Amino acid sequence: MSSHLRSLAFAGLLIGPLLAAALLPAQARPSVPPTVEHDATLPRVELGGYAFHAEHFGQPDKPVLIVLHGGPGADYRYLLGLKALADDYQVVFYDQRGTGLSPRVPAGSITVQRFIDDLDAFVETFGRGRPVHLLGHSWGAMLASAYTGSHPAKVSRLILAEPAFLDTSTAGVFSAGGMPPLRVMWGFAAAWIGKWFVRTEGDAYARDDWFLLQVLPLTQGADEMCDGGLPAMQAWRFGSSNFQATVGRMMDDPAFARQLDFRKGVDAFQGPTLFLAGGCNRVVGEAHQRKLIGHFAQARLEVIPQAGHFMFNDQPERCLAAVRAFLKQP
Image (cartoon, rainbow, N blue to C red):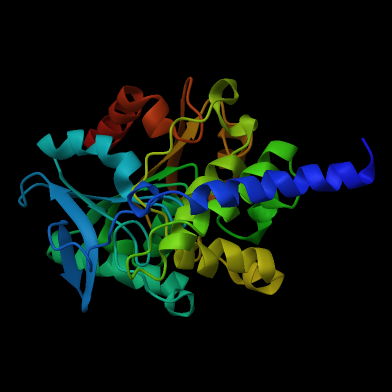
């Protein structure tokens, strides 16, 4: 095929979807669910003048377990199986500032300290002066570690499920690789085209949020999953400004990445810590978690067999059993 024919074929691949999407009726175009500021029926918790999309299960007199989702930029939908612990605990879920179904905010207003302060507001509100248990997955585990280092007396037990890194000494796992596979490049291109046909309905973040939900699954490597299989993405809506303020900034500004320290102060925490790792994960699985565990005074690691990075979806019963046993141990 000549270079001219190849150029025409590539142009057709791009223009074809644009023309097809342009002919779609408005109701058939993709959309994102509204946030709490646009849907009064969504559950919420208002703290410090901000309405978080949040839910809590179990009796208020029970010990409090706050669950922190990953991302940054995801939501707690994929972790809702943990509400099975509500028979013994008051289990609290919330979408972090600027993501999920919580209201959108500009990227410039999102910082790690802001996340810590938001979590502290939940601890104060639900803990009512008592230390709480924290469970974080992926980015949520990094946030849980940072919070514990800042407020060690407010945390009773800490569960960290595959934090990606805690400081620059372990951030090398995310060093840039080579050129992405063709399927990933094509997936990004198709998502970029598709985002221009998303129904915004007055929501300035709708298009970028939709785009992020399409492309983030493409970035998950086979080495992080069992048999290279990625479970269906269980999310209501991703937060593009949240992602831009964290991972996006790390990619654009190496100096910012070198400043991040999610383990500062954790040596003052004397409570029990449980690390969880998926047995299939060869990126931030068992070997990587053993590099992190030494920063905590009373920590142990449990590997969940036949589970990848999304262990709570791959092996929900095994994860629940591990969490429950840890929280109940003397």
